Length: 261
Ligand code: G3P
Ligand code: CA
Image (tube, rainbow, N blue to C red):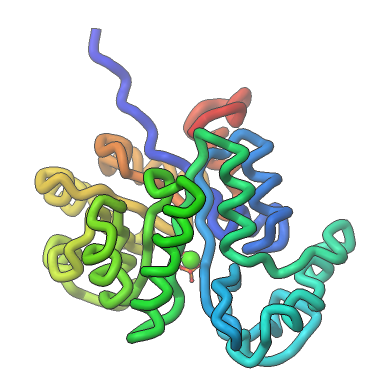
């Protein structure tokens, strides 16, 4: 009998942005407690150089404040409410530091995180190195994946911690061939928008030992399409989704979700 094909890893994008306020500890905790074992978060710097979880350059969309994250000192950023915009049930949720997330992850020994470095250029390099230093300090190097749309953070990560798996995120409008794109960045995993994933791409990448991380897959039919295109055959294959519960159900049936990584 042939062994059934594995499903790709399911990752809670921004901590599970469809189910809780994105990039908060509440979202990450909720995902972990529901059995999700991989998170994705976005990281950028405050004015005083603290790596915090925030997708946008400004706090406007996801807090009750206004202005660029880089204009806030960490103590001031902490005064903002990062939960009420999503639902009053999350009122008072704070913008977390990356370090707080790593502290949470220590409590879940089988869980891991994709940290997307949102800073670019020199700041991106510095932040990538700092992410890996923090991961080391918390004993989490093996459970961290370093992701970026920029080449600099990935190449710096390779210099300082070559053993850490690096995900080269590719913009949906960038026509570069995936193998060339990943090769230029010396990454282990290709990270395209899910619509860009095809069976020939996946076969070519897997053939070179490169995994595929597809974002952001909120439609279960798309998740199944990715599996049919070969995702799951490489141990680093992953789909990032705002609704991990939906995607797990599509992969594993109605009883899915309890402990599936
Ligand atoms: O994981 C990659 C994905 O998060 C990239 O898009 O804009 O949600 O950070 P974005
Ligand atoms: Ca991201």
